[in-house]
Image 1 (cartoon, rainbow, N blue to C red):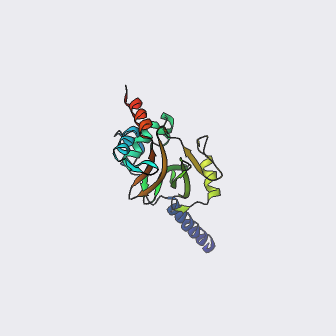
Image 2 (cartoon, rainbow, N blue to C red):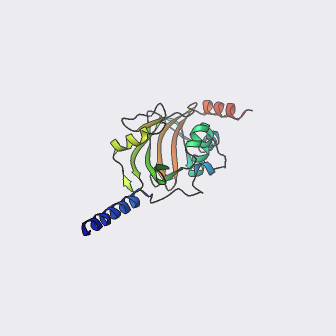
Image 3 (cartoon, rainbow, N blue to C red):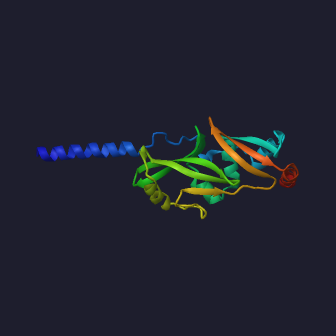
Length: 210
């Protein structure tokens, strides 16, 4: 009888520890939910900001634009499909320290839920913006990349997602500018650009016309 009691005690302790570990340390709040976002900003508005900050250098015109968390959510809301927005409705997407962070609630089994937390780097290679998964956690448990790939395979990944290096190329309107670099600090991204003024103004005018 003592052996059975000891076994049950150990089992309860293990189950309690597992339960604690799969609970997220930073759950998504109702205010953070992507599906709750309403304010509108678009990419053209940010490019107009870049035009107003033009600097002339020996290599041509350069500028920068600041993308805050609110801008990021609005741009995603504008460009994602209805299905993608529905899939991300309960998630939090925001700049956090020097990364882009995505927190995605998961149903594991029955009433047991957890949260997948992805920390992403934004990288510019030859003018192409890429999102690279640097680290991940399930609840409080760090996920090795091999296990992360298995978790990601359970969802619907974009066709151009590169599973081997956990990278997603992002296509942006590229008329009139080239991406130079990007930095993330204190809840916002600073994007550095090289611009062709005439082509950029033509692109903005075409976007603004009804």
